Image (cartoon, rainbow over all chains, first blue to last red; front, top):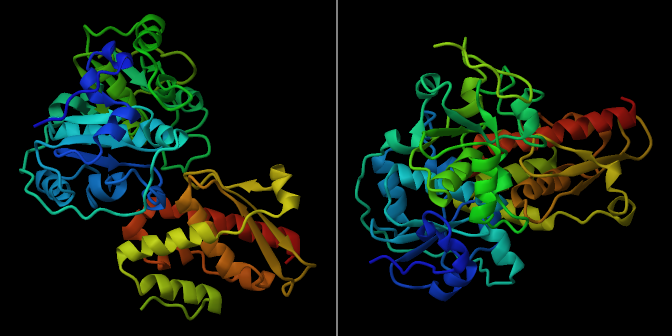
Amino acid sequence: MPLPFDDDPKFTAYANPERLVSTQWLADHLGDEGLAVVESDEDVLLYETGHIPGAVKVDWHLDLNDAVTRDYVDAAGFAKLLGGKGITRDTTVVIYGDKNNWWAAYALWVFALFGHPDVRLLDGGRAKWVAEGREFTTDVPSPAAVDYPVVQREDGGVRAFKEDVLGFLGGQLVDVRSLPEYTGERTHMPDYPDEGALRGGHIPGAQSVPWARAANEDGTFRSRAELDAIYRQEKGLTPSEPVIAYCRIGERSAHSWFVLQHLLGFPNVRNYDGSWTEWGNSVRVPIARGTEPGDVPAP
Amino acid sequence: MTDTSDLTAALGGIVDDFNALTTADRLQLLLEFSTGLPELPERYAAHPELLEGVPECQSPIFLIVEVDGAGPDAPVHLFFSAPAEAPTTRGFAGILHEGLNGLTAADVLAVPNDISDRLGLAEAISPLRLRGMAGMLGRIKRQVREKSGI
């Protein structure tokens, strides 16, 4: 039995308001039957310093990625992970995290690969909960393991591979990295570790929309009108055509995927998780440099 | 047993402590190092521009090395600045502070560059995140070389 949706007036303008909850909604529903709260952060120790009471931790490196192949966990691995956290297929899952919900959105996207029915983001994430002086605890819950069904991962709907992108050149590509990464001035984020790309630049034809433009200073999502102004009016993106978003390893673009898919209601949005660490290391793929999307090579 | 024969007593003790724990408890120990990292003294807190950034880390961290005098026997002092919202990075800094602070310049330069791989943290926090600690050590050593003249 899913929990009621948050009828916060801010959310009603979004395409899928049922994908967001406010900090107040979460505070009101903590401990409810059928609710699981998941923290997913960039910093792997942040959960241990204190978390929302009852929240369990899911780490992208350790829990969501396959340890050997560059891929996500498989159906059995996902079932084991969620069952071990006390999450059933019917559980309402609310995910929150640091850095504007960057990794929380990434976790939500992986949940979407497995079609988990009811998974929501906490608008404003960890930072808003902190700013409002809400309760934190270092008590780590130990939920009783439950059965989560082994559901095959469906990569077709919301995930794009390099071959898909090669066949998509000329379509609506969105590069959500920082501008110096887009132009090719640098191959990784300022002040972040370099995961290694041999070439700098962007996929020809891709529009530059740095991911954090979708967030307010307090980490909440911008309003529907502001998001429309950025993605539709300024960048000319249209929901009538498919979109593929990418970044460096697919995490920042999962955040933009959430915005396009669930807040703006674009029906066909995929995240290219290979992103620049694959494209910028691939032999003979086309690359554009500079501030313009650049010429798309003839097929 | 992880080899500690080429480590100083303090660093060898830290490596032994981590490896004696379960993976989950290693995270807790890293958290203790994170909370135990000393605050910057006033002369640096008021002048953050004197500290060097470590872009290999996922979160912002800044460090500076002081060497008393010159030569291989000159004692080394380490100072770090990292926000509380970056506990992993603070934890790395805390380990390096406890393991290296007060050693001689020669001893700091002799610390093996793979020290971050010996803590048994790869499976607890992922190998990629450990790169930041190696980045810190590299910068510490470079500053020690420059300032000690050896």
